[in-house]
Length: 288
Image 1: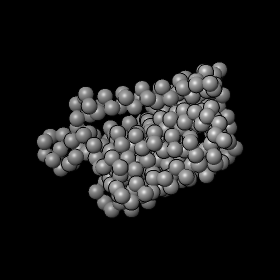
Image 2: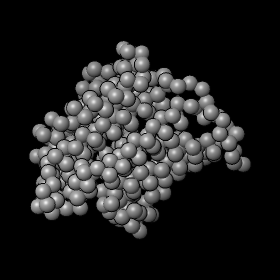
Image 3: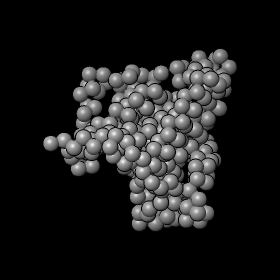
Image 4: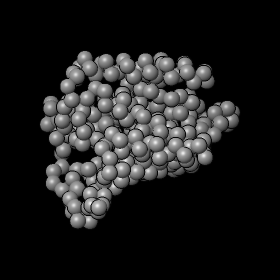
């Protein structure tokens, strides 16, 4: 017999998890949509954000500082990464970028191993307590973090729709050649999207750090679901990536009532395969 409170809890948990997955997939999809690169190092940047959260709590005793420190650090590091690693791969065979970013993934992971160590560690939630929802109690911090993630996603959407740089980004996503001919600074747009993507991934790492074990390899675990979300939502379709993240989160939550967590995640991914067979460009289509 189904325990409806457990099912409700897992559905809410799936939606909350989807907000963080959406932050990660958003940056991953943006880089592919504009630069044409599958950025394998994106998960490592997410891990960097979580590690910075742990160090911030340990050294400064204040988790909230990490919400500023981690995105700024990731954004600063992404500038030379773009100049010397990503930029030379633009316009070349996709495997060139895949190899370059895979190498960067291993470099960042090894640097985290050397500085942070190989033992997983805990970050205490900065907000304690639980909120009653539909007959069950849900951790307050998770709701606060999910609300912050939603606010960031909404801000990013507004940035794309209401600012001049957002207009440039949408123009470049449609056609870099026509955008350049129209006077759009394509190089600047590429740099901006790489910086924003890194900041989003690091922010997601910070927000999720109090909900999981922080380790130098935690970025590898999120890469698979993030890539699936990007493909399901439609390569280059930012809104589709967020919607697909919610779909996967809810599916994972429902399946976890009946299956162990690992099998539930695999099952959520498998559920999308028939959709991809019917719509290989993603259920929400291509760039939007």
